Length: 173
Image (tube, rainbow, N blue to C red; front, side, top):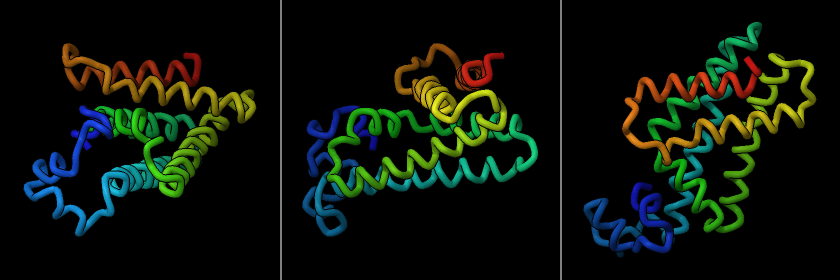
């Protein structure tokens, strides 16, 4: 994933990937049909994990939407800070996938967004669902900025800044 994120899909060969994995490029064909299959195998579990983690965070707070929202934000900020290469890969290479895995990832992403929309609609009942969806996507833009953040601010402070900015963007306070 780091190679794809740093060099782009077309900038990485099977030999490059094999070398990074400690095997020859052709040996990878025993496990994957090619680079597209490797990219799909890397991205699908990430989307599944985000959805599952989001659902778990929401389930922890069945009667407290604000706590559920804070937990979702904490979850996603930690994911984003720990996985900037994955985010870069999603942003720049998702369209390189064949239609079926791309559709599967998009569906998982939509379901994850809807977890956020449902919670945000409970926190801000005055918002129609389409407006809550706009805010959720804006929040992802904030939190998923991690591939573009330098190391001049330590990780703990970056997390706090991202959490604060996201809660303000979503709630207006």
